Image (tube, rainbow, N blue to C red):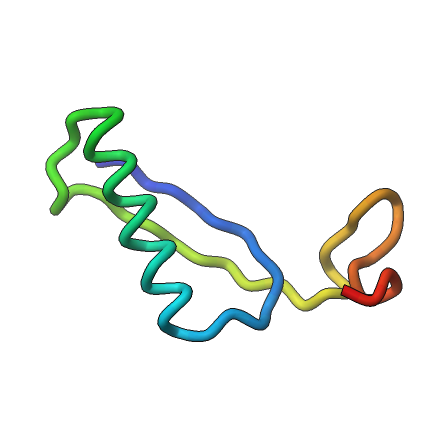
Length: 63
């Protein structure tokens, strides 16, 4: 059973998150020949102050 954890900053809407789940699932089915029903996709949303880019938090960078 493939399990994928996607970490991203907060702010995407439900439709965007559904699209990520669908696209990641489809990629794993193609790449691994895994049964679609066996794929698990977990989305972990992080606040900008918990996401670092180039030595600064995304919040500090204004993202």
